[in-house]
Image (cartoon, rainbow, N blue to C red; front, side, top):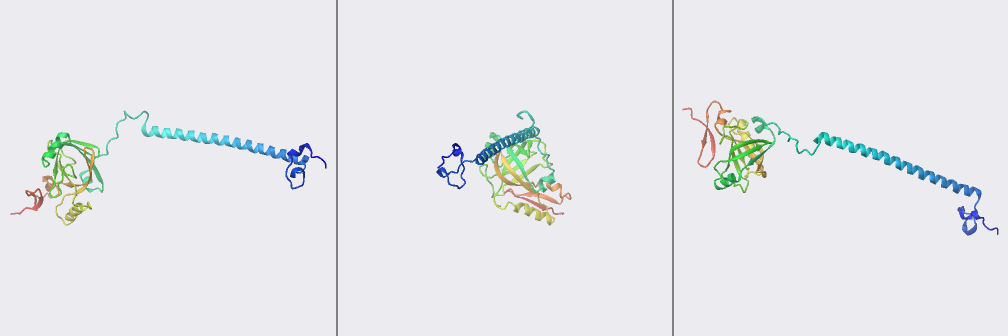
Length: 263
């Protein structure tokens, strides 16, 4: 048997009998192996080049994205840490009609000093000095007391409040001397008071307007309140200018609006 050539170590399987199950290496087989190796190197080279191109392209995209993000941050917040930037101004105050007419929950914070808190705990129905912040607008030196009959709760619960802007200074809030904040403790629907007033007005009877307020006291959330227009001389004077209505209060703190006897 003719011994295999030295090139047998580069032989390829072709199904033909040969030494150790390998076919004899021919010049054509060697050429094919060399060509395959060249193709493989070319493919690997192209893959490396494609990978580098992808990295360059992707890196450029990331760089542009980073610059765009930085530019957006500068435009939104300005340069620096913002410590010296003035705060955004609060939204303009609503009109009296908007206060009671809009389907909106307004934000109100009652700010009480330690002394005022102690006085309210001792005499909850006596006015104490306070500041209030309505939708970012501060009204200073107003009178605040607790109110309520069967629904009365102290400061430890969901207290109802009377806020008198005219108690200590000659001032008004949207033309109002005071507002009433009812805790709606006996109405889990939170709608019966507002709906009842609207029914009265619909039948031509005097009734206070109302809306909703999210109340906090010294920043602590007390909950959702009915902001009810107070029945006072302004209330009787404005919508009922004929002077036929009067305010009658009983000893229990309940107020009634009655038509005066013309005689």
